[in-house]
Amino acid sequence: MQTRWLAQAGVLLVIAAVAAKAQYPEIGLGWMPEFSLATRQIKELAEAIPADKYSWRPAPVSGR
Image (cartoon, rainbow, N blue to C red; front, side, top):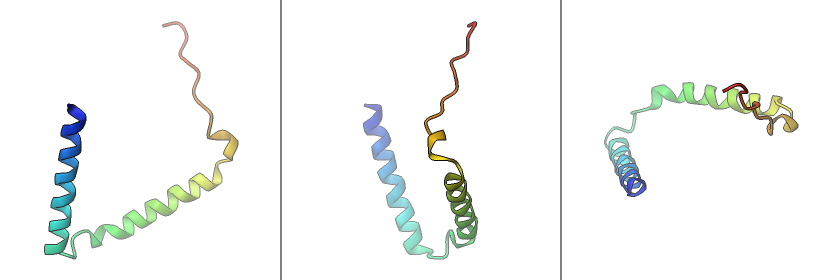
């Protein structure tokens, strides 16, 4: 039930965003350099981490 509600809310948000973008095409252009920088940094970080380290998980906390 909650999943259906979340899906409907997501669809409404996408529709609202598309409508706002169509009405004001310049919305969000100021943030594009920030998103581009974050995307580049995350990609560089992912490429710098050795593939065998991606499966690492912290050990369960003992004594609890």
